[in-house]
Length: 126
Image 1 (cartoon, one colour):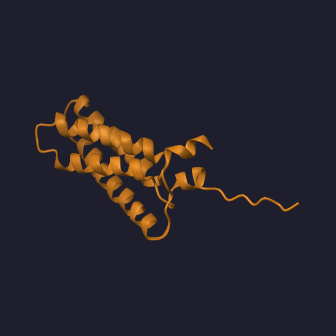
Image 2: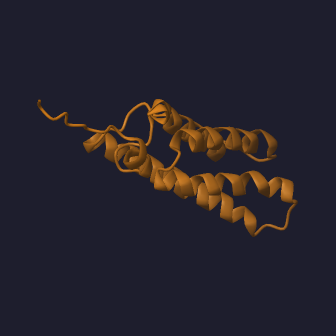
Image 3: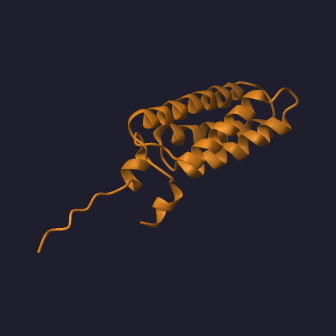
């Protein structure tokens, strides 16, 4: 399967739980950041990266296309950090978390693991 090369690992047990927790926390912060900016009366260009981040957070929470979403989160949150006038501490943290998830992979508790995870084939004896 050629798509499996996008994923480094699908760890289970404690490492899998840790990756699941990292995905949940990152998605939660992306939701709060993205949907919090929707209520502001500002230009669409300032809200757009937050909306992209919130959408990628939904996919990240589900564990779907994790390397692509993590990379997208990293790029978008760096865009937010360097384009905003205020401090970009949360955006830098979210960019780092997205990049690490893109590098490590989604873990065993994800849709990616079900779709692209390691398959066990039993070869019948002759």
